[in-house]
Amino acid sequence: MEVSTAVFYLIALVTVVSAGMVAFSRNIIYSAFSLLGTFMGVAGIYVFLGADFVAAVQLLIYVGGILVLILFAVMLTHRITDVQITNRAAGRIPALLVVALFLVLLIQIVKATPWVKAKEVAFVATTAKIGDAFLYDYLLPFELASLVLLAAMIGAVVLSRKEIKE
Amino acid sequence: MAPNELSSYLIIGAILFALGMFTVLTRRNAISVLMGVELILNSANINYVAFSHFSSGNQAGQIYAIFVIMLAAAEAAVGLAIVLAIFQLFHTIDVEAAETLRE
Image (tube, rainbow over all chains, first blue to last red; front, side):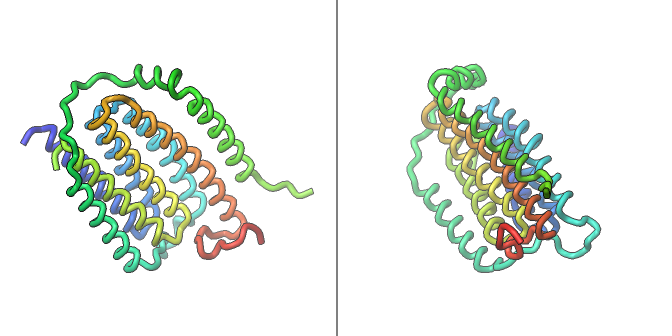
């Protein structure tokens, strides 16, 4: 077995196991920290798919931004000294049945579909091409994205400020 | 399962999606529900990038993945702000306890 194949299996294992921890852990702190492993593993999968820029964006935004935000929210809302189960789950068995059926269905579809054999493409850095695409073909969505982010920022500030009673 | 097959990436994406859906369905803690949504978005992103790598050879799938990441950031910011506002109001973030938007 080649080294890259072994690394791929390792990354896939880390991704799936930590996603399982997110889904099944009884402590929300463990869930939040397992999300770190999932995000890093997904970034590794992007590297295997030759998407270097997306992998960097994944690390910067998910690990550096969203995960920190989630951890802040966990620490602000849940009393860490409480011993009781912080991550209550309900209706596990029906949900497990439905999700397992769905997963089996998806995997059967993936296995049964005759995917066209991929042509081997040599890796080329994608950052410059993505920058070009954003400024030519995807200019309107790119500008709309800035509007969406501005609206989300204002919305988050308005929602989380203290209400001033007059 | 091998690094140069499309189906292995699709299976990883399917497993992540199933785990995310399980999290969203079973958790009663609003932050955990948001974590499940992040898992689902990540699995969709894996599919986008994998199809882009194995079929077209251009960067369209990666660009869609970047847009999804951007929207996930906006969703996390607004969602967690709503969760904190609900916590200030009800002193719990159990999604069954917080049924109304005001007292």
